[in-house]
Length: 139
Image 1: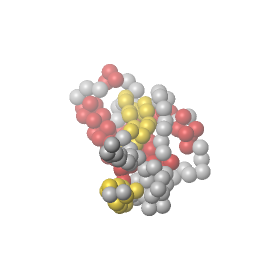
Image 2: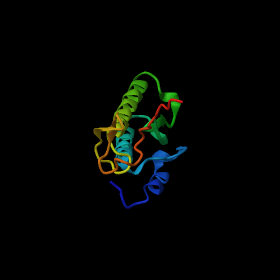
Image 3: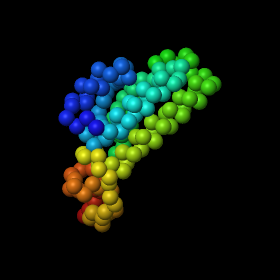
Image 4: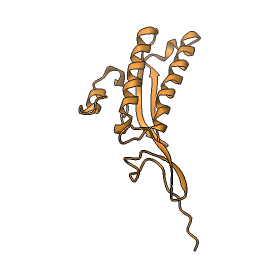
């Protein structure tokens, strides 16, 4: 994992990010972004179409990576099926973020905090992990 490199700069210059609108990834999820990049590079070598990453962002407490083919015209039949399989695999990779601390990447554990069951990294237990506390106040 690239902990000491400016990973945003690295990905802005990467050919897969040629049409990328934004790259916004928590430090703890960089390994998932790297895994996705390697998988898409592999997929591009074995298919007839080139995929690009168009956006990387956190959404609803998960890492979301949008991909699209460089040329949409040849996405028919077999190619459409291959593209769907690749999208499903990218989704499988990014879904791992639901079990990872967005700060350090460690595995989350289930704990009880203020009578709520939450998933948190024990090292960063008191830092915001994407779980929002909603309290009802009677007036």
